[in-house]
Image 1 (spheres, one colour):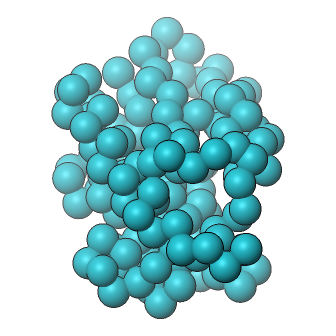
Image 2 (cartoon, rainbow, N blue to C red; image 1 turned 135 degrees about the vertical axis):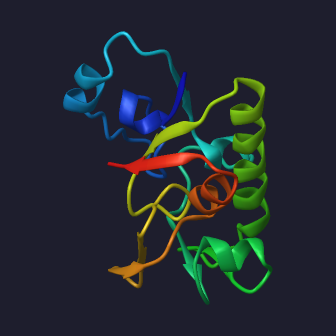
Length: 141
């Protein structure tokens, strides 16, 4: 079984209530058991919700309490982001998952690149940081 960002399978769970369905990815994974998830929803955030960015670092820094996740409305959403990442980690343990396909550039799921002030910067999202440090092989799409 592979963990996959819900927006990549067509679930309308992005911050603006839209999807990022990737038909090519889904075709390449035909026959594979997929477990769709959205760490932001699992952390208790609603859909739609204000977009958010990591301020003061990346997801690793958030997990180390050195950075925060702030919504475009100014609300600090660090706690739900960390909660969602933690719940995602529970899923991989519960289902013995070793790999994941995540939505790139996201403050939750991005690996290697996230957005800050409207620009791409190096860094990992909160969920990607937690999963990768727990041995999950992540492919970002």
